[in-house]
Amino acid sequence: MKYGKSLNEMIRELDARHKNREDYIADPKAMSFAVDPETKETRLGLIVNVDGEERQIVSSLKDLAHSQLLERLDIPASFDRKVLQLHPELHQVNVNYLLQNHAKNPLMVRTLNGASDAILSNAYKRMDNWPVAEKVIPVLHEAGVKVESCEVTDHKMYIKVVSERLQGDVKVGDPVQMGIIVSNSEVGLGFLNVQTLLYRLICDNGMITGKDFGSGIRYAHRGSRQPLGIVYSEDTMQAHGHAIGLQVRDTIKQILAPENFEKHLVALRETTERRVTGDPTKAVEMLGKTVGFTQDEGTSIMRHLIEGGDLSQYGLAQAVTRFAQDEIVTYDRSTELERIGGRIIELTPRQTKLVLEAA
Image 1 (cartoon, rainbow, N blue to C red):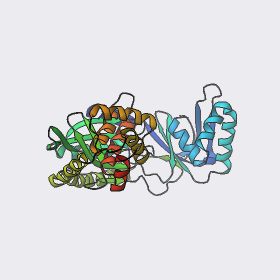
Image 2: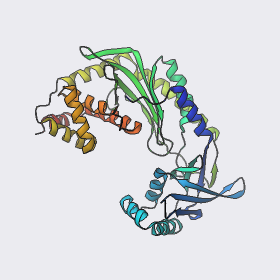
Image 3: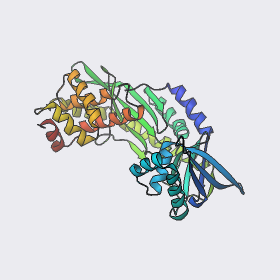
């Protein structure tokens, strides 16, 4: 797996981000959108009520927030890219017209260090990375696990840990350890997840599973609609964090149960017996269509499959998770590829047959 920050480095960054985040609930009619015709940089203006006074907020729009705003206004992304590049003034007019005339529900605008990094529903429940980490990290320490990798990106937070006491061979000389991944997005890109992580020692590959045994928990960021104005760091977020801590503790016990690890080992060992009997190149192509990696990614995965020399279902999964470590792969995509590796192990018999026999 990729190695990001140390745990202490991540905690310091989460704390800094949490202190510099401000959130607002605004009526779309009180929003204004602007594009710099030269640089194509976008900005969003808001008028919100803060402690009884109207305040004007102006912030730059990060790419994700820009995309989320367009999605809220039903503007197709491909159309937007062309108009923004060729006719930025028209793009500005289109967005402002839709804000004033068609957008109905209030929106939550999340800002970090003065830039808008997410535009979400006003029913979005904030479970931010710092409060989550504050509750989860002590629970992980209590479980006696070892931190293998941590990172916070513009999109998500990740904490990956393994238990050195839960180790066994998939094949002779090919040991894996049981672990856990905690991930969360505070910008609307997914659930708060606690999932099983399998860590292959001989090549540092990580694989995230979740369909069958000890699949973990996930929390949706859905809550009640919030009124217009600034959104404060209310006590309910901390109370929810306490509940999360308790459920994470129970989930860790379930995932790290020895009998659960044995079930995973059996499932992994079975995949080593299922061999590619068709064309390996076609098998990788079919696999990409089944689990979701691109043609370019498939080329690199094929290279790792050849280098690994294991033409089995297990070898296919390991080629994907080995590619996840390549320098060109971002941490976010690397983690998604680790989930794809887990999905390869969990393919249905029919899917497995189609991949292995592809010709």
